[in-house]
Length: 318
Ligand code: ADP
Ligand code: MG
Image (cartoon, rainbow, N blue to C red; front, side, top):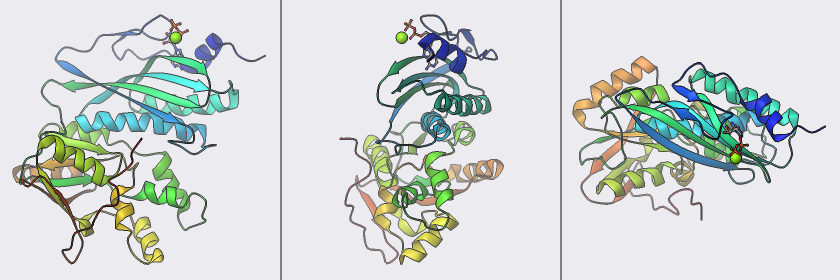
């Protein structure tokens, strides 16, 4: 007999949360939480729809991980620590094998981040997952996208473009295909790094819609411009080999491809030593890719100093 909605919630989602400032968790009309004194809440939500944000038949564990990762990445970009999440799950049927794998990966990752699932909603329909994540920020230690200043150096964490390559090779047997797919389906939100960076950085964004599009958000909201030195954009060894085999780097793909979930931070020169020390501490690759300028314009410069014209600036939802 198929599980009832309540049995399903009980079996897959209701878990005892180890405190996490949860007064009332799953089971009542609302969750009730009490933030510790001196902290602000950062609240974000993202919806992932099958066939739009992930391919049909993506493994349930990958979907769970990606759903958490994209939300935690938003929190990381503000310097917030994930604390509570709610989950709205719409599924065509209550497939217990699917739910087993989804819930196991979900609870596993929540455990790693010491984050509690405190509520949600369960409905029938085409597969779609909406997760809301609520994080804590120490008062005054928030990074925003509108605080870039001319002269700041533009840094990115990790490597750029791996997820876009994964999408390009979904149905092609290229070298390291599984590694690229891992980068697409299981991004690593830079949570610990973001929280620590917020001690001295005031401006950051996470790169989700593509490097150019997200940098454009920063400069537009800050009322500044930017120069990016394209050859400085950090590539993974796998991406380098891929582009070598393809006859060269596809700059358009590199700057417009989405789903990196790395952080972009702008820092005044005086904070660069602190950023580099922090990167060392977290064993996080950070790379300076350009500078913030006062002319309200984004320039993407190729090796020979010419400007890359942009076809489109990144993922557009409509
Ligand atoms: P209500 O009818 O009061 O909105 P629901 O029947 O939708 O309550 O849900 C019952 C309880 O289970 C609530 O506490 C809700 O937050 C929780 N819940 C429902 N679906 C999920 C889910 N997918 N994940 C986590 N909690 C859920
Ligand atoms: Mg409900």
